[in-house]
Image (cartoon, rainbow, N blue to C red; front, top):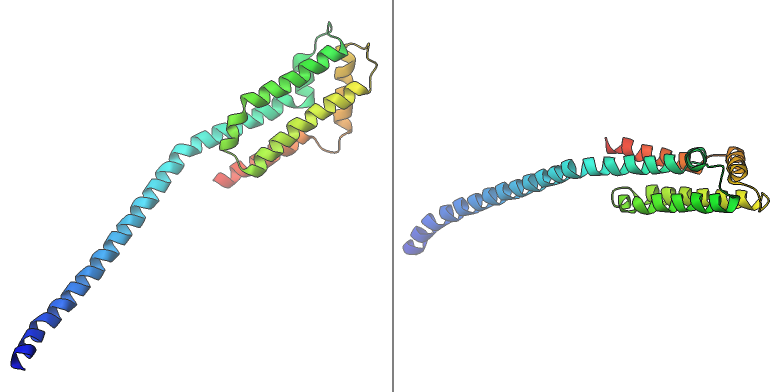
Length: 173
C-alpha cells in the first residue's frame, strides 16, 4: 500500500502538469492557426480588391458605352441604312459585352444579372425602334427613334445597372 501511495504521490502531480501543458499548448496552437488563417484572408482580400474594383470600373464603362445616347452618337454615320445601322449597333453591344464577360468573376450575381439585363434591354430597344421606322429609312432616322424611345422609358436600364454596381462598390469599403 505504501508503494502505491508513493507512486501516486509522483504520478498525480505529473499528470496535472502534463494536462496543464497540453491544454496550454493546444490553446496556443489553435490561436496561431486562427491568426495565420486571418492573415491569409486579409492578404487574399488585399490582392483581389484591386481586381474587383477594376472589374466594376470596366462594367460601368461598358454600361456607359452601350447607353442609347452614347451608342448612337459614337456609331452614327449618315451613309448607313437603318438595317445596317441596327446591325452595327447590336454588333457593338454584343462585342463590348463579350469583351467584358470575365468581369462576372468579381461582381455579385445580382450585379451581373443587372448588367446582362441592361444589355438585353438595349438590344430590345434597338430592335423595337427599328420596327417603328420604314425599312428604306437611313441610319440617322433610326438613331433619332432610338433616342426618342430611350427618353420615353421610365428609367434607363444602363443607369439602373450602374447604380447597383456603385452600391456594391460602396459595400466593399
